Amino acid sequence: MFNPLLKAFVCAADCGSFTKAAEKLFISPTAVMKQINALEEHLGLRLLERTPQGVRLTPSGEVIYKDAKFLFDYSRRSVDSARRCLEAGGRVFRVGTSLLNPARPFMDLWYRVGRQFPDYKLQLAPFEDDHDGILGEIGALGEKFDFLMAVCDSKLWMDKCRLLPLGRCKKMVAVSRDHRLAGRERLEISDLYGETLMMVKAGDSANNDRIRADLTRDHPAIRIEDTPRFYDISVFNRCAQTGNVLLILDCWQEVHPALVSIPVDWDYSLPYGLLYALEPTEEVARFIRAVQSERA
Figure 1 (cartoon, rainbow, N blue to C red):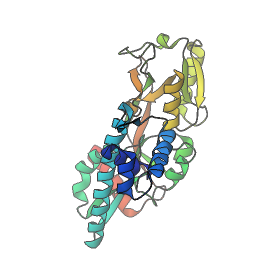
Figure 2 (figure 1 turned 90 degrees about the horizontal axis):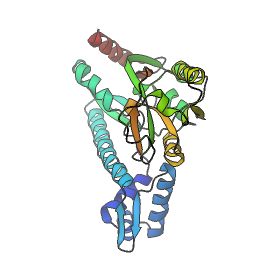
Figure 3 (figure 1 turned 120 degrees about the vertical axis):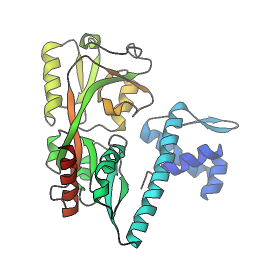
Figure 4 (figure 1 turned 60 degrees about the vertical axis):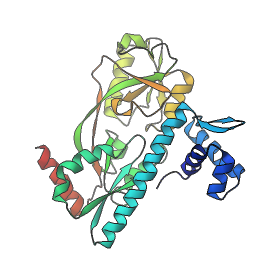
């Protein structure tokens, strides 16, 4: 239910040594090092500091370690809950979760309407944010998972799912911690003059296309660099490595430990809500109706 490389990372962090982690995992120390190197390369982050005395967590590693432990525990409890539910003849709602689309906001809905579904339990269905594979994950709604809480105005996404709007997330920017703007509490658009602003390429998001058009017309001193249409960790890594400015959402402020998020004096936002299958089951449709009634 999670990236298997995390297991080697957490074990090495707990043991303080590749050799001791290898003994616990019943693999060679070289295999442990290769798995952790692969994880660091995948994330674009240095997670462990290697020393003659062993290994210790870097600041970035501490963030990933904490979230990995939470994911391990939540996944274990989710599977245990699903098994107990199955044994008791109960039913399960599967909720997709990823770094950019966490399941925690779904719990707010569940606490409000869950009492109408006393026979149901929740099961997390983790997936990775991958700009090449995300459409497949969205297309799996109704199969791999029943619900996904996400920000969405993508035409490509909406061809594959339905959205129950719940609100809007404000647009912000993110910069590396050593960027000239990193210490600012709030920015004017003019503060971005001379900077390169990373944002999704045109054509799939009406809201992002409007931002691009406004900036191109009214603020030509801001250079725009296209990112893939869907963010993943590689986009945040590029921002940290290049010193560029990244257009983000307020719900992504803690995604990358090397970046600082700063609000801007503009009125841009994207809708967020509950995604579900184009042809939902009756149980899913009943949950959607319950949320709509509770919010009415």
